[in-house]
Image 1 (spheres, rainbow, N blue to C red):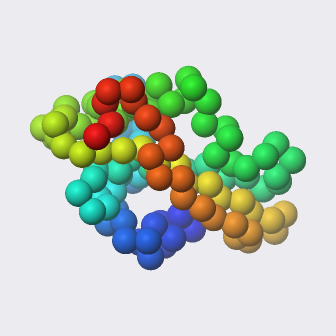
Image 2 (tube, rainbow, N blue to C red):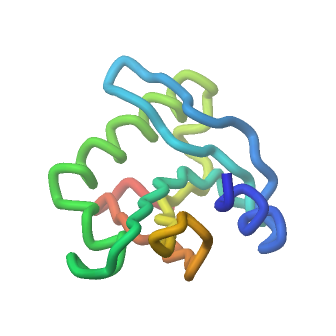
Length: 114
C-alpha cells in the first residue's frame, strides 16, 4: 500500500489497518505526535471526477466519526486527542503513483475532535 510508506515518512506510527467496528471499518489507525489519527484512504486512477479526497461525503464523514468514537471508547481513549485525516492517492492508467497528499484534520466532529 503506497499510503503506508508515505505516512511513515511523514512521522506517523501505524497502529492498525482495516480495523473493524460495529459501524464498519477504519482504513488505518496511527499515532502522530500526541494524536490518535484515523486515516481514510481514497484512491483514483483518473482525475475526471476531481481529487480523490472529494469522494468523502458528509455521510462518509459521519460514518468515520462513529467508527473513530467506537475505537476510542473500546480502548478508553475518549478524552484523548484525536483527529481524522484523509490520504488522497492518484494513480496513472498503469496504476503507478502519480500524486499523494494528506489532508490533516479533514473531518471535524463539532465538539468531538480534540
